[in-house]
Image (cartoon, rainbow, N blue to C red; front, top):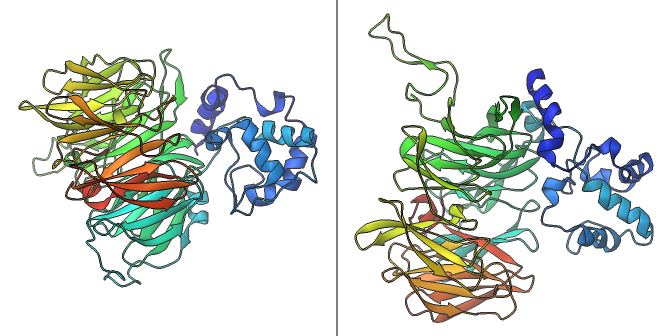
Length: 529
């Protein structure tokens, strides 16, 4: 990290790492004796700097899935199926609580994690080209699923025709953002909240390489040509470009801009997406009112920063000043949740403050506003044709609504009432139905099925009373829908997508997302991108 970037990060670290948080030195719970206690009991596994080693990073951003009261129980009792020991006989309640307060205290400054640290972290288990190019199993390679089991940090490779597991492998702690496939479906890239990027060879059922691209990462995107991956980081504030063949970092893009007062600040990155028709990555920024588009084309268009045209020489072509040039699109509000039309020339962005906008990616300006109440989850939006016109449907994580938006007039043509806020919505081009969960609230065990031709709920499933039912994904042909029961004693349920008849249940350890190779690599309109 350059000195100017460090200065920016230092000035704004408190605001960006937790608006109400104080620096480590000024929080009473973080006293010298507590720091010493951490070094004695925790540092060997979680790192002296709390960035993580064999154990996960112990920073507030990395511990969002673990409440403080549960963290105290983990320290006291250990964690099953891990190397986390129990400290109840070594530490009293006050000491345990002081450690909890310590690890939930933000760092005083945005930490550095640059090229040197990334390269030092890189692990190569199998050199590129060293493994066979034929799969070691028989299956339709385009109808495979990866099922993430967050309960014990594993992933299951599932045959989408027989619904039989092919392989199950251990992953890094707390996967986040969903696996992303190479265009041919051979490789999958998996992101952990701790910033580890793992490259898994599906054909050979092996993790071939890993690199830690950040300290707290949100997700990654893979270019349409399969050559690059871009990682979105909360910590440090940047985007990282990886060479997918070698898993080496190619470029670190510091996310720096200006706030409403014109003061230069650094920003967390909420997410990054691949835009296939544009040959670019598009990033959502958490703390700057801008959308960033980063080209991975060999010859980016002239309007990307870093490119010039030599008007004195008619034969001269555009010459790159840098790889992966960036153009920045200003927005009125913070947009950290995106949806795109299938052409990727329109961006639908949602603000956590309740505003939703349509941005023209080519004109680089706001096109119009959307009338969407609550907090639409645009990242889980889907599209289909309704009465001859394309529509977008989005669940809502604050209200029991599914909004249907005409993508030509941008009018909200219907609000479908559900039995509670939902998080995931899915369909398939070959299916007349869209499925949406009720992820939050007392009806979290229900899933609604919507007829795409009438925009009415035609069926409500309650497959496992009292347990969260969420995240549907379809098979390659759209004939079957797979649903997760998010519980440690969970299941993967396969349904006939036409009759809604239950076909099979597979026991799994808190399965969350599942990702079909065909739907993801072909950017199906019925699944998130």
